[in-house]
Length: 398
Image (cartoon, rainbow, N blue to C red; front, side, top):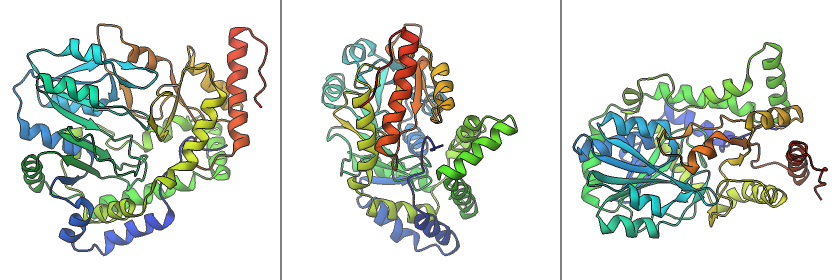
């Protein structure tokens, strides 16, 4: 069985990270090489940077943050921790871009920030959002945690802050770390000062993380992964649940306490290496496989199918009965899942397209290293299920 998601990191990178824990370089030098400008700040995580930014802004309690209706739970938790009110803005399922009409209707006198999340590896156009924000005016934070493309993009020129993540399952992972790019250098320096008061992530903590993900990387090979899944089945344990729990960045509660650290020097060292060496060419195999599968499933609901920029960090699919389809694919040897990430639809009294998307969402095992034949077989398995469900004759995938 081919794993649903491979860690985007080489053994040599893991080795460099481990050695940096034992023999860390000069911190000031490595941090300067990571950030490269006075408008950029390296943090432990996107969550850390967002928390620091809200600390500095110190908005009045009850202020509203408009944000993508699909996001990760921790971003909502941080907003609420600061006494602010998250207000979800619906998405266009075909592009995963914010619905501009809903965005305009959602703005109130209490609105202070628009937090835009680029989802699933896609990147939406920001022009319309920025036009809306400037009419009011509102701060815009662009969350590119899932959309790093190694193409030099540092956020829309009018975005106030852009967030990039290099967490454990992200593109070009450094097993942690984030970059915040600010339009206002003074704002960057204020947030930097706040971060300087935090303790540094212990090297032993980061070294333990490297060891854990080295073990998970061993599972990225089909032979070892097949044995792992078989053992989980033998012991009546869900391999899906074990994997989902193991890759969560800040699991187990006490989120704010866990994110309030500076990145270790070793983490900065590995992050600098990944940023220096990673190129768009490293994404082409994954993009090609995802595009092939998209082409073979022309009539199915694939969120962000029509996005103009897409690296297919994950491959989502909507289906009226996602649990049954996941089970069908597992029986066919394809490691589909419903729990590939911590994304969810923010609860809302008004029905939103985003809520239906997440209710019907599953994630397909498409990543770097899969063959054309594998993609064709996966498409055939999906279409066979669809045709059985709809009572149609089987299609043949050519």
